[in-house]
Amino acid sequence: MIRSIFRLMWRRKKSSFLMTLEIFISLLLLFALSTMVVNNINRYNEPLGFDYENVWVMEMNLRGGSHDGAGNKQLFDLLVNNIKSIPEVLEISNCSSNFPYDQSTRMTTLYNEGFRIGNADIISTDVNYVRTLNLRISEGRWYNAEDHVKNETPVVINRKLREKLFGNNPAIGKVFHSEKYVVVGVVDHFKIKGEFSEKPLMIFEMIKPERFQSTLMIRTNSAAGLAFEEQLYKLASSTAREWTIKLGKLAEYRSTSFRITWVPIVIFSSICGFLIINIILGLFGILLYNINNRKHEIGLRRSAGANKGNIYFQFMGEMLVLTTMGIAPGILIAVQFLLLKAFGIEPKIFLIAIIGSVLVIYFLVLISSFIPSRYASKIQPAVALHDK
Amino acid sequence: MITLKNLEKVYQTDEIETVALSNINLEIEKGEFVSVMGPSGCGKSTLLNMVGLLDVPTKGRLTIDSNEVEEWPDKKLAQFRNRKLGFIFQSFHLINDLPVLDNVELPLLYRKGISGKERSKRALEALKKVGLSARTKHYPSQLSGGQKQRVAIARAIVGRPDIILADEPTGNLDSKMGGEIMEILQNLNKNENTTILMVTHDEQLAKRTNRIVHLFDGMQVN
Ligand SMILES: Nc1ncnc2c1ncn2[C@@H]1O[C@H](COP(=O)(O)OP(=O)(O)OP(=O)(O)O)[C@@H](O)[C@H]1O
Ligand SMILES: [Mg+2]
Image 1 (cartoon, chains in turn purple, orange):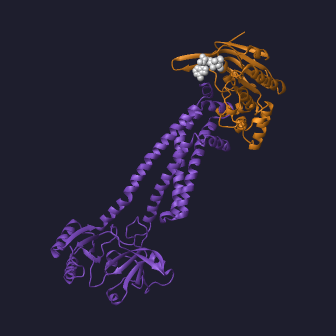
Image 2 (image 1 turned 180 degrees about the vertical axis):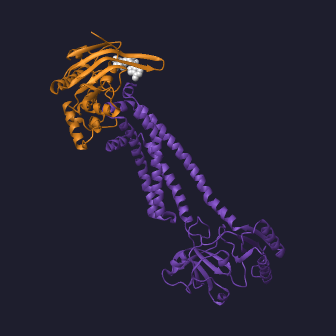
Image 3 (image 1 turned 90 degrees about the vertical axis):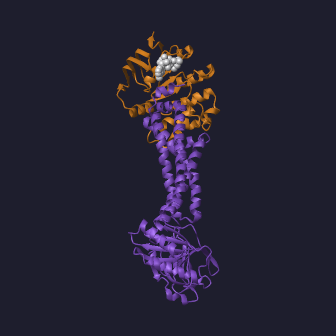
């Protein structure tokens, strides 16, 4: 039975080419979409590595002033002390402008014994950063004020970088990047670009004591709201009159980064959804048209001993065979992505996406073939043979 | 073996009621070769469809081998058609996308427990009987009208049915080819004792059968 359906569909491959092509394209679209979605879900499920709630971000634009000019540094220290005196403030930390979720990036290319190991995100922070964002240290410690006497800059790195640089060997006290950095601690996780980003190679370097950077991260208690924001802003602008102050909540930067991730996916899935609905309706229509053109064949099969169920499965079977013919080359292409580990995405994710989109296609085809096939099975054999 | 008693068939389409058959009483014995004649629209095909269990009578009784078929569910009817009946149509009704051998195998597909090998073997035998064993891989479009009808006959006999229902099997063929087809049917009737009910417009062919049933406007005339 199945073999005869295969043979029939193979003979009809020219006339059903368009349908096969539609299924092929739907599969590729669904595969792309589900890869994106599964990849994002997978990334989301990996720990973020810091707390974003009740954290405020203050960006200070010195309007051309220097970050190590003595006057500015004094003003900065005064500002920090003033902010600390607000009762809602629990922790405050200075860091470079590439704070989590922000679009700005600072990177350096790292080599290990001459081999390029990748681009690492570098963020300059002070000693309070670990407490302000609640980073979890898994080896060593965060840098402290005593560390600055060393020649090398003390850094904390994340586990991914630690493994690339030192493998299973001890990391604490080791130097890297042409002996510029010395490792004092390791954090397991820190996804600087947010939940949906790939795990970065991460370096936290200590800001030299005589310098400061353009951003303050301020952790407050949960009582801090609009009034606090107002107070903080006024305090900052009255302390550093020459500077431009920009204030925001880390949670808001997070929302923005979510939008940047999901808006294209939502648009893409709407387009996919629209195309796929069209394809389903198309298949429905084409199948119905085919059935009406093949009434004689239906009558003939009934006369030869096919019951209603046989006719139903004939058409369902043909659609499944057709779908398989469209899906097979699609799977071949999709598997190439898996084998090549394209876009640095894990093979596991491609595999889930392939299986998922294949199942969805079969499901949709079954849905669109169900009604026409039932209709075919209900055609009276005498009528089917009689029709001109 | 086939008995029709007061059989009536009325087609109801929209407002129009067509009486296709009325008060048909007919008995066909095993091994008989009966032809049905009558003008176009008189109900010949309808009669064949009733006997072929492809349609149900509006009134009256139909028994085959003393089976009351009226109450049978779809599956049982299909099985009966598959095992006992063979159909031949005026317009051949071959599936154009399948080669000759697959077309002939068709009834066996709906029979359980026959391997693919066995199917091809039986199909080949049937094709031999109609003298077409050299064309198994051809497609219907590559055959002449007479050859197509011979394929259709092979398909009708591949399941070794007791009864063959032929609706104008020579209607689309010239008289020489029609004669050949008639010969095949007569041989089946003679050698295998197959009961045949054949619709024809051809007086000469009808005369070669055991008995002629004349229909006019849905009624039997003698
Ligand atoms: N499925 C149907 N629905 C409605 N009317 C039908 C149907 N089948 C047949 N009829 C009508 O029943 C009557 C008998 O039709 P039938 O096909 O049996 O004639 P026929 O003797 O085979 O004619 P022909 O020699 O032209 O094949 C005709 O009036 C026809 O229009
Ligand atoms: Mg007719």
